[in-house]
Image 1 (cartoon, one colour):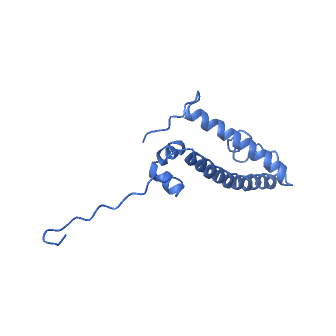
Image 2 (cartoon, one colour; image 1 turned 90 degrees about the vertical axis):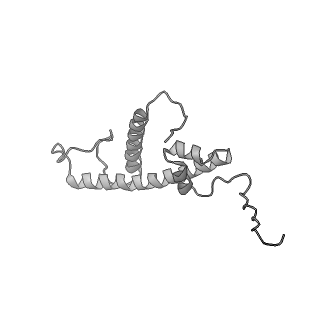
Image 3 (cartoon, rainbow, N blue to C red; image 1 turned 60 degrees about the horizontal axis):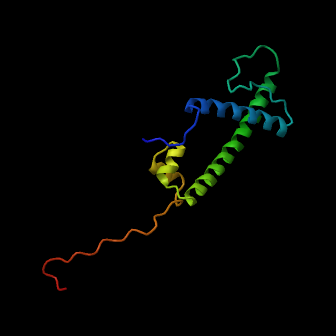
Amino acid sequence: MRRNDLSSQFSEEDIDRMTVLAVDDLTHRLADQVFDVPVPGPRDGSPEPAGGDGAGDPGEAVAGSLARLRILMHLNRAVERQARTEAEQAARAGAGYPQLGDAWYITRQGARRRWPGLVFTATPPRAPYPRKRAGTPP
């Protein structure tokens, strides 16, 4: 499958690493701000070691993980809404399903299923003219 023509000085792996770190940081900050529970945990996108270092209350670790999980659910919904908005804006600006799919790293058909009804052809397709069968009057 052809990939998009968006140029960047960063590789896809670099972009992935950057977004993981940004989401991890945002998740921690929102959980700290929203919930009235301690939200300890790593801030580098990596899982906590099993058993931890012996410090901290296991109940706090569970509460912190659940608080971050709740925030991630809200972030997931927000990302879906924002992706829909950006796809709509791109379609209004002239992008077709092939370009939308390339940007999301899915096929044209995948983009059409993900965002149905965003892109229409300029003129609707016409039905073929009926053919006359031999022996029928004109």
